[in-house]
Length: 155
Image (tube, rainbow, N blue to C red; front, side, top):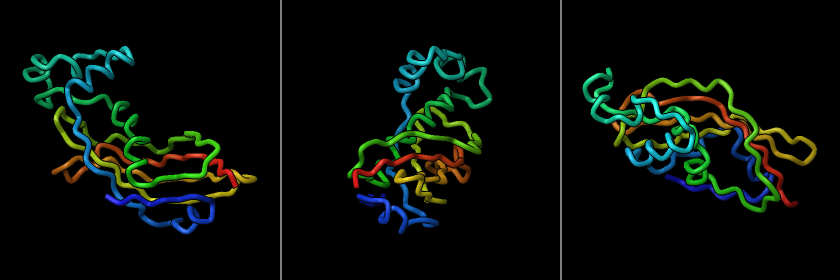
């Protein structure tokens, strides 16, 4: 895990095209899955019914909601890069997000990130970041995609 500290547009620009690093692993628990199900009203049995999932699911256990794993992006991203000196940060876009593998309960996941492109939009940094959510001990990621943040630096 690395943590790059960025305080202005030019520092961020210096990483364009570079892999920024990986986050630490995060354990996906049944409690987290259940809380996500409550918050989103998505209580599909494949996520919350442990006994049924063990006997009827092709996965042999409960799995995390795909959107639960996506919701971890900001948390895991901040472990890789610390963007400081901001007036505001905006989640702008997710493109080409492809779920490739289910995340079983008690799996550990981490984020790998690369700064694909950076544009200056009249003082606002538009950062496009290629992401992959890796599953520990798996050759296939949970998902890959490109996320875009808008950074409004104070300077």
